[in-house]
Length: 97
Image (cartoon, rainbow, N blue to C red; front, top):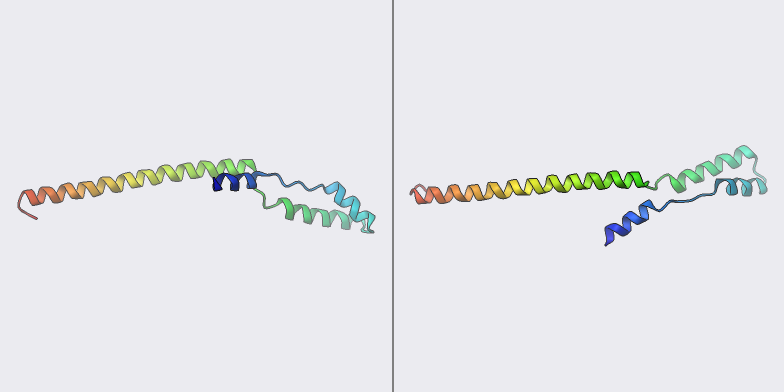
């Protein structure tokens, strides 16, 4: 199912080894402060947009509520439709329609 694949992609943890990144930057001549700032910026970019399992659980709950509310709305509309048909049939039977 497409939606399940999408959810699996969202909850896949993005791993970024900040210690290794800082060591590599320092080895290339960056100061500790520069290496830390660059590493933090990259970490935020790599992991900042990834949904957590809690995010996905909240989304699922919201979707369940939306489905339930949508079902109630459809049931009400169907009920109103049949009520209108019944009223029309009654009016025709009474000679008013």
